[in-house]
View (cartoon, rainbow, N blue to C red):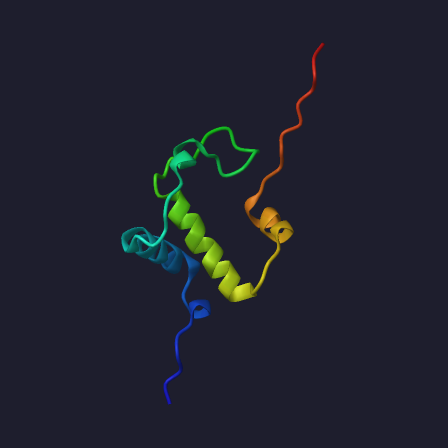
Length: 91
């Protein structure tokens, strides 16, 4: 009896780009108009250089939700977030 292949069996380096391309070509996702000005986090200075970063992030999130089940904002913050730079206030 042949075993079935799941997302857990496919490496993330293969699944995420393929699923991101599928999401982009399917046309099911409506891209927000403000996306070209958005950053991936408050700790970033610039927006991503990859124009398809939104679809890559969605594919990554879909894989995480499939593998680990329901996740909260706090756990996603730990995985995708970064450390905010502390700046000193000068007077």
